[in-house]
Length: 338
Image (cartoon, rainbow, N blue to C red; front, top):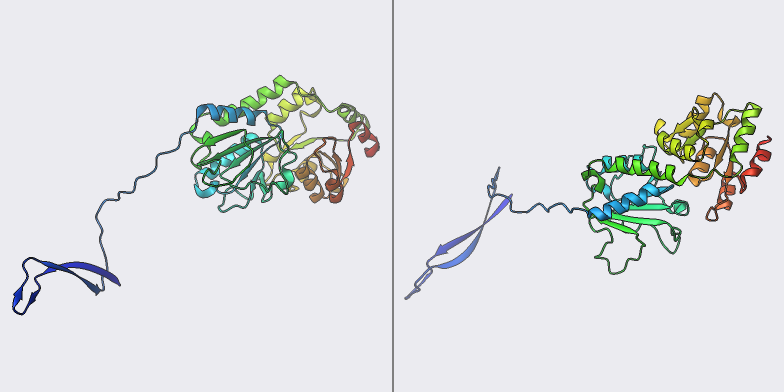
């Protein structure tokens, strides 16, 4: 039923008196209409895109390219469906897991290797850079917060949620941009981050953990096969291992999360590496230094030796998961019976 309101002009007359001029009254006419046409052009303006500050974008690229363990936290990036594939490409460029923290949209494919789950808090200690995209509450500071030295970047239409009367999350850089990630509009930005990352790794001459070369040499002497299974891309592993002088030891036995359907903490990567190396999971030992890696190894049914030398590592949690914890790589040969 369409209700139509009409304005009708009439002369109202009374006996013995005539009022000049029209008087208006409103009649409500209700009748059924099978169709209605409305031809007036829409006047709602489409908001112009919010363009990022090039200096801020450059600062973000610098922070992300220097990060060793970046993570991404988002709540509503999927409000713009075009942003989802853009976020996938950014995560793959960084090798960074994406956490759907209190998500209100489909922000990231849940079957992607870099989908980290829905709770970022357990990973805040290990992150050295956090990219927060369209998320008003990325963590609860009273329960868990990043380390003071962790770099935090906020990206969104209103990245700091200025309309909130109280909000105190730290930030080292913020980029005001529509929901679609900023690099999508800047040709070559993803490639630039990748190139900067490789350049930084090569320039900094990453030092190998003391004792790791001895562990590899003992494995080789005993005829035990070994490999590297990492969440990063092969090219990043080449840069990291090459900078540390270890690439010749692992060049032919590198496995990346990009090779499987799900990354850590899912077991897929370790199971893939074990199969490729020709050994059943129960005969494999995983040396890990991250919570997702420990969880992935346990899920794969493998023995785990968790390296916990960093002061922020929760060694008790590793033990609770079933890992053997050690804090000196020179102790590892004894744990492995070498």
